[in-house]
Length: 412
Length: 157
Image 1 (cartoon, chains in turn cyan, blue):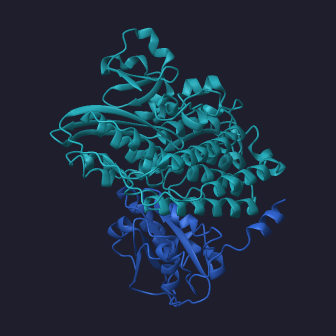
Image 2 (image 1 turned 135 degrees about the horizontal axis):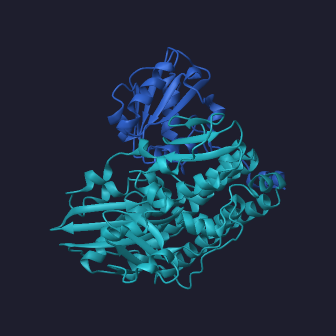
Image 3 (image 1 turned 90 degrees about the horizontal axis):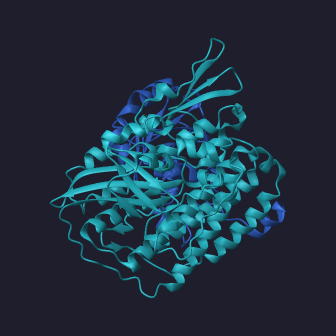
C-alpha cells in the first residue's frame, strides 16, 4: 500500500477510515489502497469518532448514562467463558444489554516498551510472542517493515510468508466456528471442528517446526522444514463440515439476526476485517498486495453473526486453496537474503485473522527507536460492543465469538 | 448426517498416557514437567484455569486438551468455572495487573490445593507454583501429563 505523509484536502478526512492513533493519526483508504499520516495538529478532524475515543482511552464518553433500575456487571477478568483476561462492563436491566465497554488493560505486558532499544534482528524473538495465536501476522508485519527500511523485497520470501499467514487464518477461523458451535451446544460438530483444528496445528508443526509458527519468520529468511503435506484432505473435510453446519437449523437460528452491524454503522465505527466484510465493506489489505494473484475479498451483506460466519466459511476455503497453490509452486525452500538495516521508518499492513494489523517502526543505527502495533482486535472490540447493544444475554457468546477477537492482540 | 460422518472418521483419540504411537513422539516431547508437590487425590481432579496475561497460545493449548485427540475427560480431568470447587489452579501468562486477581482466586480454593504453572512466562511469574510445565507453549500432552503427575498417577513419557 502507498503511504502519504499528509492529507492536502481536509474535507477528504471524513471519507477515510481511522486506522490508528499513535503520535500521529493513521487514516486508510481501502478503496484505493492508500495510507495517510495525519499530523497531531490536524487530529481534531477525527476526535469525534467513537474509535478515536476508544483508542485514546476516553471510555467514559462511550458509556451510556442511565437511570437507577439499570445496573452494571463487571464480566471478567477471571471468568469461565472468556478463556482470557479481560473485562466487559455490561450495563443491563437484567436481560437486555444496554451498553458494553471492553477493558483490555489486564493483558498489558509492556512489550512495546521492552522492544525499544533492542537490536532489530534480535527483537523478532519477542515480536512473535506478542500474540501467540496471531504470531505469524505479527512477525510478518515486523519483517516487512524492517525489509522496507533496508530497501529489500523478495517475491519468493513474500510467497512463503503468505503460506504462513493463510495457515494462521485457517486455524483461527476454524477456532471461531468451533466456539460458535459450542455456544449453540452442537457437541458433535464441536468435536469434528476441534479435531480439524488439531490437524491444522499439526500441519503447522510439520511445515514450520512449531504449532503456532514461532521461529518461522526471520529478517531476510523464512524457516520451512518440509513442504510435502496433504492440505487437500483438510479442505475436503472442512467443506463437508460446512455442508452439515449450514443445514443445522438450531445453529443457524442462533446466529441469524444476532449482533447486527449495518454498513453505515460499520463506516461510523471504522470496523475492519471479517466484521466489515460481513457488512458489505471490502476492507481487506490482501487486495492491494502484489503477491496475491487476482485476490477478491469474500463479502456478505447482512452484518449479523451468521454473515460473519459465512465469511469465515468462505475465507477458510479460499485460504486453503491459496496454500495448495503455493505449495504446488514451491520447488526448493532455500531462501536467505542479507539485510543491513541502518536508519529509517516504515508502516506495514498485514491481514491477520480478525482484520488488518498495522505496525509503525522507527529504526536508528540498527536499534529500534520507536515501535507501535495496532491489532485488529483493538478496533473491533468497539464494533462488538456496539453490535451487542439491544441483544439479550444469551446472544452474548454468539456475538463475541463471531468476531474472533483476542485480548492479547488488543493490549500488548 | 452427523452419525455417518462420525463413523467414517473413526476413533482419533490417542492411547496417551498409557501408550505413545510413533506419530506422536515428537509432539509429546514439546515441553518438560517438573513436580515439586502432589495432591493426595487419585481419581477425578477439578481444574480451575486462570489467564494471568498470556500471549494466548498457552490458553489455546489448554483449550486443545479437550479435542478428540487428547480428550482429557476420559482421564478424569474436568474444568470448573469457580475456584471453590477446584483442586488445581492452572496458571498461564505473566501480566503484573493480574497478580491480585490470581492471589484472590488462590485464596478462594479449598485445601489441599496446588498451582500448576503452564509455559515459560508463567513459571517466572508464579514463584509459588508446585508443578512447572516448561515450553513456549508446552504441548497439550505435557499439560495433561502435569495434571496426572500432580495426583501421582503413572505416566509414560
